[in-house]
Length: 121
Image (cartoon, rainbow, N blue to C red):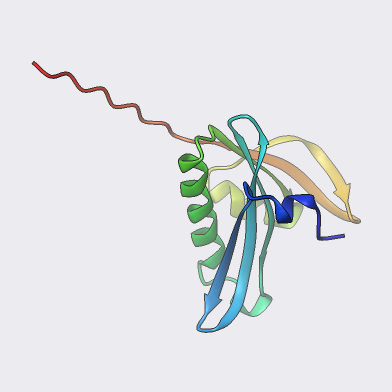
């Protein structure tokens, strides 16, 4: 249930957080549609929660999304994690729905794009 074709795609970015040699968190970022990335499978071991690992992983994911020229990141948050994502700038979209018997809410974040223009006199 947790493995799909996106896991093998060369365009999917996998992020893993380690404590020494032990993985304590994981996530993936894939293209959802042109210019939109989708954050999925965000998970932190229970004993590693509250240490800023999730926020660091999501920040790394945002940097990767900008590099891939995504203008937005979408995700489906478990309802209890909604405040975490809100603190990171994600906004609720739509109604609560059930996935794998767990309540979720769709959320998204617009990515800041800076365009620099130079002129030589």
